[in-house]
Image (cartoon, rainbow, N blue to C red; front, side, top):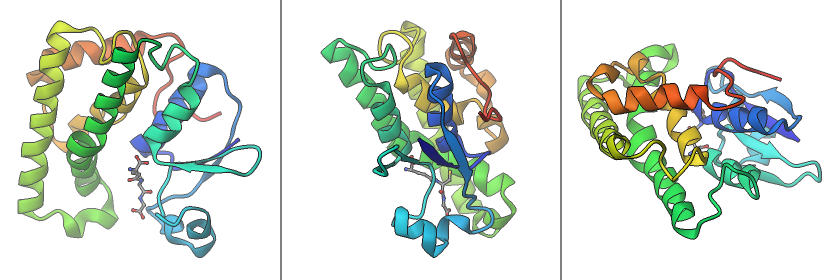
Length: 201
Ligand SMILES: N[C@@H](CCC(=O)N[C@@H](CS)C(=O)NCC(=O)O)C(=O)O
């Protein structure tokens, strides 16, 4: 399989982390948004949404959207709960990650650390992403005060939420204010086969 990937992207880290844990061999092709490669016509022909990650299967079929890739890879493994209710919880947190978490926590980090995004880092945008990102961290903290993981045991939901939560400090979020989240980050890192964001096959 080929993963169209970007080394410092949390969205791309999600499938990389799961493939590392599953011991799945893959080729990674760097397509960086920093240099505009995601918008190159040959890449847009493959993914009209002009984003990474994208997984290309051995037969040439392709899957975009990080959480869809996670669900594809996790089928019949311990990373997708067998129990119907817990599986629904995993979906719940995957959708939460994309709608209520990533657009604020990932985006604020990009606004503050990616030179090409600096022009978008207006005071209004920084204030909005800070407020909504903190709301998401609060929701996670509340859940994690009562639960070890997001959907029963460690699952794709933890992978998806870990990807940008562990670097939230780079976006100006104070993780110390969310002790249950901080403790969960350590549990995720202690799960068998964990690799850091910089890992590549
Ligand atoms: N919802 C998508 C978001 C992917 C996304 O935002 N990818 C960024 C890199 S982290 C990207 O490719 N941006 C392209 C660009 O800005 O040109 C997913 O979860 O895969």
